[in-house]
Image (cartoon, rainbow, N blue to C red):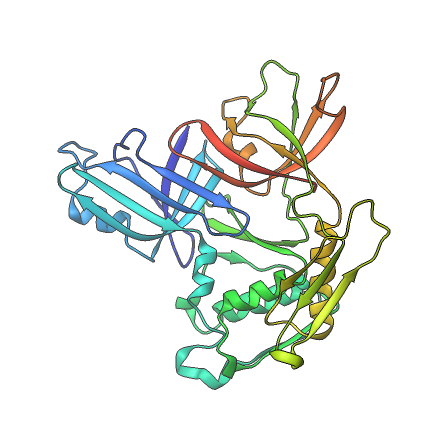
Length: 359
């Protein structure tokens, strides 16, 4: 049920399906909440109607101008990547196509076009974090048609986020996105297919991005989940947090969040937020402490088995899961909210997943 398709990197327009024979067990792909996933698809180069010549390989997998979508069925996008390179192995008669998630490109672009360095200053005033992300992604793609990617911008709205990023600091777009994330949100580019079969990326900005919900009963015989574990962890629990911001020595800004009473001995720590000052440093410190002040209830699911009843789209990154348990000796009764933060696999219907508790 899995298939691989190519798309134009600027518009997302569908090009064609890759029909070359895949080498069993050789391909690997991954997607994750941070946008650092990758792929390596391996195809046989054979003297058959579906075999690949140099011209066909170049046409299919032109680096940087090609996006890949891995699909389940006709419209379900399991993962998407930008082609980085391909390599032909004569001994094995294979071609391996490697790619990265689209967010990787934010680390390559500055807040300015290199021909307009002094135009690189970007300011946002009293914006929501969605609005700030929109302004950054607009700058990411604003200079000309060739700067575009098929990215849907988040809504613009007002809020408490303000910042000025001066051109002479030479920030990358990734630097700016990371600063917004340090304010207590995630920014996820979620791939999907339009009715016109165009690959696009929906920009989701939230404290915890969760898109869609799947329901599973842990005691059901036909559940698609395996390797289920339950854990309570205090490994990262804190009673106080010092946020260390911009500057050096005595002039380096710091913020604090904490306060008890706590039922455990003091576990205070510091975290580095090197680009932040003032209210934004305090907000980042508050958000980090809120996530770490209590023990974490951790569910682990090793793999998801895709089928006609349970399509692979149930296991895509940002998918919310509701796990219900009743009458188990250890698993707590009730419905437990998780979300998929990482998925990986090959051409198999077995998808390895990493889940996170909470929504």
